[in-house]
Amino acid sequence: MAFDPISNIPVRVVDTTVDVVSRGTGEQTHDDVFVTTQLELLGDIDPGKKTTLILPLASEAQQQPILCYTDQPITGAQVFTFDDVERSAYDDEVVEGLASLADGASKKEQRELAVDIGRAAKSLSSAVVTVEPGQRTLRLFYRIAADKVGDREFEFSVIGPLPSFIIQAGGSIGVVAALPRNTSVISAVGLYNPQDPNSVVPTSSAQLGGRPMLGWFWQNDPLFTVRYRY
Image 1 (cartoon, helix red, strand yellow):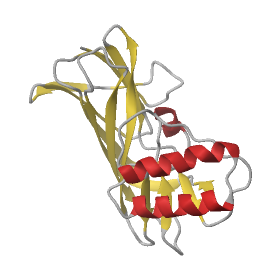
Image 2: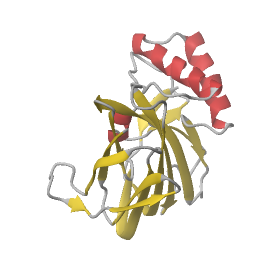
Image 3: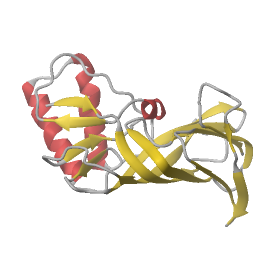
């Protein structure tokens, strides 16, 4: 088994919701960020067979293409990064198996990882998702961390869509983020060119259900960064 990056998958519509779940009152090291993205695919990821994808397991992993899990043997070390967030028992087993690949993996460890990925894929997983040939709606659900960056201040970034997917002409992306109660927004910036601080996507904001809410709507592949304070 091995991991192959996927890229240039055309999509038309991307809708993302971000739910930031508090782990304390401001003294904690991080909050949990739940990202749910629904994509309208314009083609198959693999027209010949079901595909198993490894979802981002750390904030920085969002900047890399999604990996497709295959039945090819693993050769050499494979390094994955992980945010310290709560996961299901099945997802924890996948994370432990992937972490062990940093030092190479025996045939026994590879077989065990295959079983762990198979179990997670059949559950509501934030680590693994399967895609069938002909499937045109893809739902990705993963967890990352909003790290503490100052006195009672936290920050997270979400890339939409992930680098494996390309929004086609006439397509669009919508993002809605809900912050924890008893927090205030310090900054909320969307950039359609992450390398250009002036390429700003307009932000909408509101207070709903006692929680700060943020929203963006755009036609490109933006980076959204939010900083908030308890």
